[in-house]
Length: 428
Ligand SMILES: NC(=O)c1ccc[n+]([C@@H]2O[C@H](COP(=O)([O-])OP(=O)(O)OC[C@H]3O[C@@H](n4cnc5c(N)ncnc54)[C@H](OP(=O)(O)O)[C@@H]3O)[C@@H](O)[C@H]2O)c1
Picture (cartoon, helix red, strand yellow):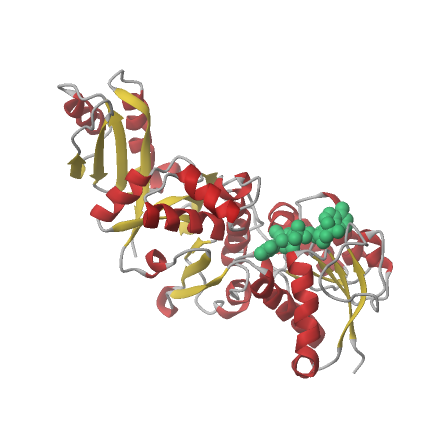
């Protein structure tokens, strides 16, 4: 069989990881792929950069989009970004009938449905295993392995930076800013961390998981996204006292009248699988009805894990795998109907910083009661001189909008300092 000719755009962490993995894999990889895997063109921004590997024998192309006109069978995009050159290359490659493999979640969360349609029109494969949870083979599982019973919900720790920061806050007692600075020093966080700590990166990955699970077009607009900046060490400590850990979760659930998609910090019960995921690791839990649940854990980023997922996609392409990339034909991806706000019910952790004055507790409890929210347990801590008092409560299961409404009123009280913190308790 003829070799599979590969063009690689982007030679950074993942791109060089892929070239290394392909070079190391050699014969064994060719055997798995059923044919030789041959890199015939590469591109990055600066040609002269030392990339720690001799690349002189591979033809260089200055313009990444020109890779679509090369003799490659598959174009591998490892540049990044939701639009710009990555999008131009995706469109050009698929239009030219090339197969397209990418690790780019931002690109697919935004343009996934259109690119899937373009791929199908041109009978090209579009594959993105590395775009969600790095080395964990969750995209293939969601697309192919769970079809028998269908996915009811998927929950994941999808951002290693956030999980590292939360793990370190818990271990050291540091506040968010110090834990973030440590993560940046050690290379676990970018110089501009907003996409990670603001929840945007998790949102991109969740949009893809939701699409794979429910046959809907990826839809970032119908997703509520809250990051981890507002969390304090106190929240982590109180969570522990109640038997929980705080994790940033991406959650997509089929509800009676639509799909609930959300990125938010959540209380996860100690002793359940998601609670044990530490440091920069990722994990995904899929509820597959009678056949599930399934739990996947592994490295969500880094050269080798991400390259491992990219190379798995390349091998699939070499074998001729070419089904619809989101599991259902692009033309049949439905528009996502968001769940009704009231259908989202949970018990909530609430933290208030208050002035230590008579009547403040009664006022908070009263406002919650007016919204129909009752309290299951409570902790009130004495004051260190000059500091506000923390009041922490766990509510009984309540509709989320009712709790949010009560908190808005409570936040307006002159006895309450700053915004109250509200975190749902995840079950299972
Ligand atoms: N890093 C991870 O662990 C990881 C995990 C999962 C998914 N991903 C995804 O994988 C993709 C690549 O990430 P990465 O971490 O490898 O990024 P990176 O280290 O920043 O590498 C990006 C590469 O793209 C090249 N590039 C940037 N702009 C370009 C342009 N306009 N034209 C041509 N080349 C350009 C850069 O060239 P120079 O080297 O010449 O500057 C560099 O080689 C992203 O979509 C990312 O979200 C990354």
